[in-house]
Length: 68
Image 1 (cartoon, rainbow, N blue to C red):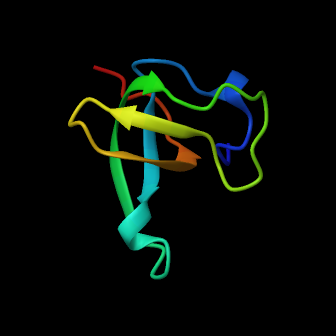
Image 2 (cartoon, rainbow, N blue to C red):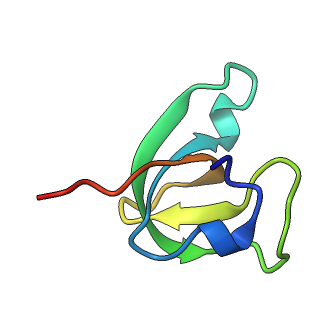
């Protein structure tokens, strides 16, 4: 999943985001979603989220859940 649809993202989901500072390079940062900041159902550059670590960026990929 590419992170453009809000319905694919939920608190606790593992995602890869691009931080504002990394938009030119496309460097991705992995983490767990704490809050969804975009209210629209779709965003062409990715839904904006806040991770548990406090970092904010646009979702580029939704990762599969880890099985214990």
